[in-house]
Amino acid sequence: MQPSSLPRGLFITFEGGDGAGKSTQLRLLREALQEHGMGVVTTREPGGTEIGEKLRSLVLEHGHGQIDKRTEALIYAAARAAHVAQFITPHLSQGTHVVSDRFVDSSLAYQGVGRGLGIAAVAAINDFATGSLSPDLTILLDISAADGRARRIASTGGVEVSDRLEAEPDEFHENIRQAFLSLAHAAPERYLVLDANQPAEDLHARIMDRLQAVL
Ligand code: TYD
Image 1 (cartoon, rainbow, N blue to C red):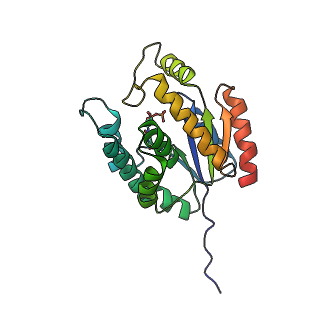
Image 2 (cartoon, helix red, strand yellow):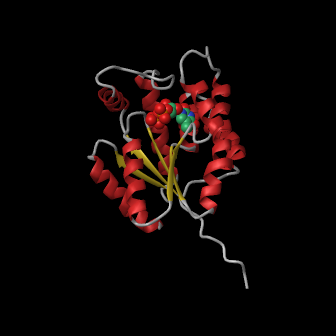
Image 3 (cartoon, rainbow, N blue to C red):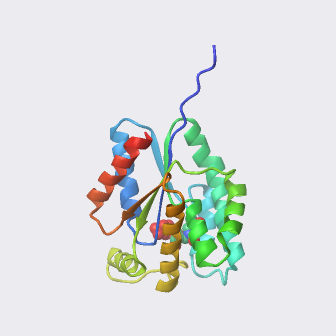
């Protein structure tokens, strides 16, 4: 008799500009999957492991001096390699669904397009970092740079608190937005694109509809 193997969990990622409301949707999705009795873990990038959280503060906090753009891309990729090896793959092979706040597409958009390193170069280092792991479903919460900034400010009680990337001008964030939209356009079977200005409950319902098909 063949040894029975557990069905692999689904790997679902959320992408979008800063302030798009990814964390709310991540939580609603986790709760819904749990209510259906499924094993699910949520995580974020950069981060998700001890080394990943250290790399996260290196690359996001102000105060480490200038970070060259290739160095920045490699730090995100290094954090991701640890995340895949130590967290994502082990959970997926146990049959647990993994929902991540950002993954490779963020590097393609922010470092590849935003920093101008080129999609191909950034895709190559990330292929190496992840062993070519690709999400089963990617939800893009699409938001304009101005709306994203307004929502970030509202969430911090009217004060603008920005990390290194958020502090970039609106033009940078508009480029990122267009980059995400064209990544989604190139892979419609993997992407669900939603207008982040819709009420959270409506967005959640659209995500659950699409997931029925994947599940
Ligand atoms: P975070 O506080 O998690 O922002 P958000 O809630 O919007 O996800 O910070 C992550 C920041 O890092 C965000 O500005 C996007 C950026 N980033 C990259 O530039 N490249 C990457 O590969 C990843 C994962 C994030």
